[in-house]
Image 1 (cartoon, rainbow, N blue to C red):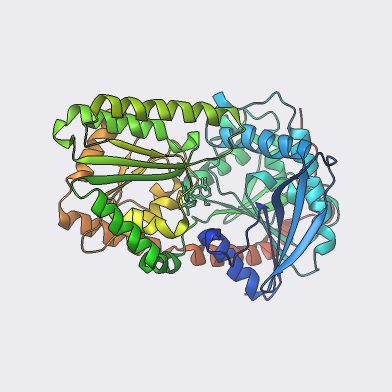
Image 2 (tube, rainbow, N blue to C red; image 1 turned 135 degrees about the vertical axis):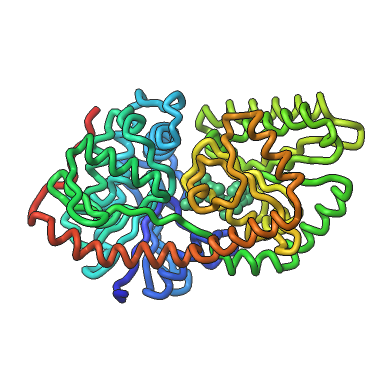
Length: 479
Ligand code: ADQ
């Protein structure tokens, strides 16, 4: 593999040395560290009031990695981050057209920030850098960089699902967005389903041609597009699971709930995660299987997320109402059916919580991958593992076939599957767990990173063969 310097660009950046950073940041940090790399992104701060389209760059060292951070003006934050990224792209890509706000004009701020980021990043780049851009906030970044003359290899990875063409086409600027992807050398998606959506969109809407394995020509450019299902850092998570905090958490939960069996969900409080549907299914199970009363307790940990976007406060109210009603209708003096916690759990406690739960509920309505599903499996004791109940609409379902797959829209069906999970015989649990762990281990985050970067190195040669010498690839969004 090449020894070029790696430059990672993402909306938010994290210090990869800090334990709270999580597996993805650690895995990217390792690759960055090896090549003395650069991580460029938003610091998470808002400069009050600041000037739209302008930012100050702040760089600092984190070991061998240079962190280059910018702040955003209030107006840029509201239109780029809260507006176009999280009130247009996030809902549409998760198939929630009803929650998308197409009227706000936020696309101008989205484009302005991408342009500003390209302008700020460009002088930091070296000729042989390899640039890896992450996620939906930064789809047009390569096009903006190319318009400024950037010729380095650039790859893009989308962490959320790509919707079917008919849904994507609801975004007034869909052609501009998809055309922007052709400024990259490599586009990585999470799943084969996402790849099918990409394939259909570019063939039908952009009259693209397939010009080789994973290669598409359209808009006068060629891009390689492929699925790279993201994994977790299995060894890091196992180490975390053996550490004091995780062991203590597991012991305390088992002691506290000695007479109950725990079902666990850990999510961000997001409408894509299917949280009300999960509580409804649990309630349906209590209603139809009375022997589960006083026996099963559902723990829902939903961390605060994007509070200032309206759809999120509505969801919080709905969820709190459902949890309260279930506890009111079914609870006993000594048994509360649902424990709902609106907080982030410290990362060190997650493996212990997962181990104490005999059912892991990962039931999104739509999800890019969902790493909690993989973490739950890895945290289990192989001799007496818990059961993963997984939505068929999570990217992880393509890989984790030995989980119990559910349709979260089907309340009764999901209630039956949860009931089955609670009663699964030990031998079946062990067999399913062995197969799941083997898969998660084989396709971990290191595999993901290495296969993406290898494909990016190859994509450079592939796409250059087809690329005409001078095409303007930036374009403008239609309104
Ligand atoms: P997210 O939607 O944030 O990620 P997910 O993959 O489920 O979701 O979780 C990412 C990490 O956050 C996991 O390590 C998990 O343990 C942690 N986490 C989630 N909720 C938590 C809580 N309440 N407290 C503490 N930690 C919590 C996006 C996409 C996903 C995709 C990932 C990675 O939406 O589909 O899998 O990126 O590509």
